Length: 344
Image 1 (tube, rainbow, N blue to C red):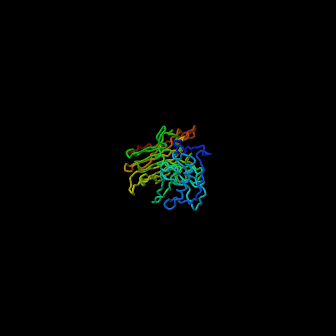
Image 2: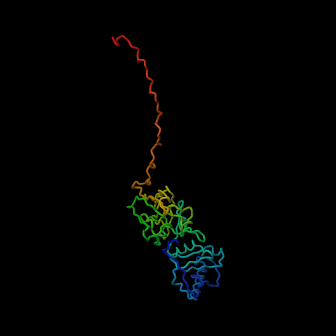
Image 3: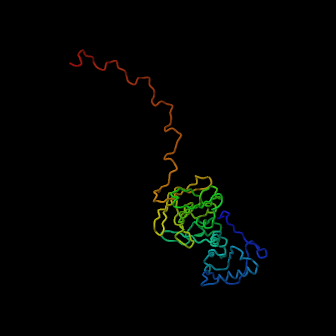
């Protein structure tokens, strides 16, 4: 579901050895100590090799498969404190018992096998290893059927959501700024039906995305659900991504590199589901402060238009009519007459 059908995992089937597609059970007959550090304890490596010998004996061509997953039983928690592990770009993963039924753990392991590295979090001046709660490669949910996927940098690395009727993975240069972008989440990408981006890569330094909590990402933790996320590619060089900002409407983030300001800002103007009948959208302003643009534009007039008159009309005259004159007439002259001239 996380790839919207762009990558599929098909179980292998060897009828002579498998009762269920993709599954073969073997007995290796050795104890499990559980230490994943093979420099001090070769037990799990021995376990894997013993299982491979059984696959060879059953004529299962595991060498032709993209992924082989070993599920071990009988390893006590104090000996196997982990749930699963795999090597990046490796061909195998090892699960402990019921952890193999957790789709989130499986997606984390498959992510490693597809070449993905962990996703960290920058928080309060320090880097939290695997602390990105928006991504399976960060802090996946330990649930059997949780709906959670990868973050924008990982989707870009996998080439997902960049095909179809519209390429929603935009690459933006500083010359394109300032600009206002309407973005959607990958859960509502729908092969680019709305022709809106789900990811903005700014100057090959930061990646801006809208983490819509719906469908395949419906169980994203509340901290990052329906928020605009900013990931930094430049901080770490080992293939990791790092979440550096979680933004709600009205909030903004300035990109810093090595403690130095860059004047590149990401500001969330609005997060609203009313603007589209198909998908909730986030309106994001990306700007260079040296150009002077610092505020979101207003798409509405200062006052709401009205087709009504400013006052309620009336069919009554403003004053009550009268059959009396406005002033009482007088039969007396204004002054008493005189037979003397007015002046000498």
